[in-house]
Image (cartoon, rainbow, N blue to C red; front, side, top):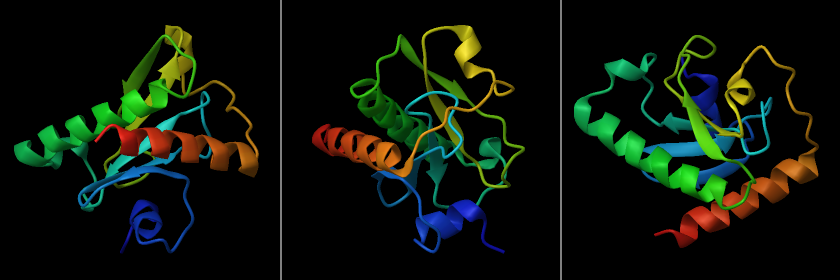
Length: 134
């Protein structure tokens, strides 16, 4: 059965896309810890990140790196933190989270509230930057 991420990739469910290629895509997290919190997802349905083959894992991290540069260009932060939890959705994904301190990446914190217009503007800005990095 397709995961929610597969349905978003297939455009069956909406998502705020910030980047995409043939193998991966990145969307804004709809329950962000900070502005710009993004999920980077392989299109192949694999539950556990470390079950990806070495070649895909390497390409995945290169894609995530480019996404992080696009986020960093659009969101004020010290760094882009990365987290892999792997329990919320049975489909491998990386969280890229703009941070200014360690506490910014605490998933127990209250989530940032953003409206549709804020999500749309931010996703468009990050997407435009990502595209210009080619």
